[in-house]
Length: 369
Ligand code: IPM
Ligand code: MG
Image (tube, rainbow, N blue to C red):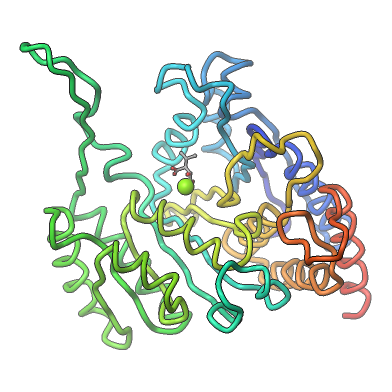
């Protein structure tokens, strides 16, 4: 699909810097690969709160429902720490996920060859690592009701969140997990806490049942705490990890770090296929990193790689997705690194120098094809 409407939501912190580099990459694809992008740009999160008084404006949401794909930077920052919870930057992102029913969050943790030595684990544990965390994104404890902080009649205060899952919500996530594993290495780890949580017992029961429809896929059940341990002990045992919203949030940060830097990891949040169309939001796994915002230190590669996922999953352009991923590898092979992944003794490049290096790599790969 070469004609595509894309909503860009740079967000907060380093979001605008990394999305600026992405725009250059998108322009490159327009000029060199015949894409015709209609780009809309809007605020989300804290930036939207400052401008519209809400972290996700009605018009932004309406636009999000129209476009072929959304690409986001990041949201959040200390500036909005004291804002009421429903108006916080994160609430804008959660509402967007919920409203578009983006239940399947794909977080691939791939260790790019040039970065194996940047991992906090020994190189042999992570080199060649290729796992996919599939996180349920629209239900569970991040959305469950009742929730709140309350004062009881006797004056004691308490806080409460609710972990709740409908059968259908678990089922559809697991189907996605088995289907993805079928295109990868044929293994699903279904991760929960069936030893202490009712939702965990339920999750395991459904995973076992759904798994029967995929006899060629190997299914293993694993407790979430054990999974965290196994991820740093022997990460290559995993292929697809299918898990709920909370565990997926935590385990994906952990898996990300195995690959060298949180600044490298992309994600795709996908809805169901309805009338031939699938709602999709692409975003880096990293946060808004307010401590380095505006300093030109941010690594734009996670956002660029998220766009590669967009090319693959929303725009049916596998060839271009491969090209973009190859360009990233080439840049890294040439030792062009932002500070988060810089090798010792090599001066790190800035965010925009990284963007420029990508364009150069794209040009050279394009000509050699
Ligand atoms: C993530 C983030 C978000 C989440 C925040 C920003 C709401 O941590 O995408 O992993 O908790 O889902
Ligand atoms: Mg997170």
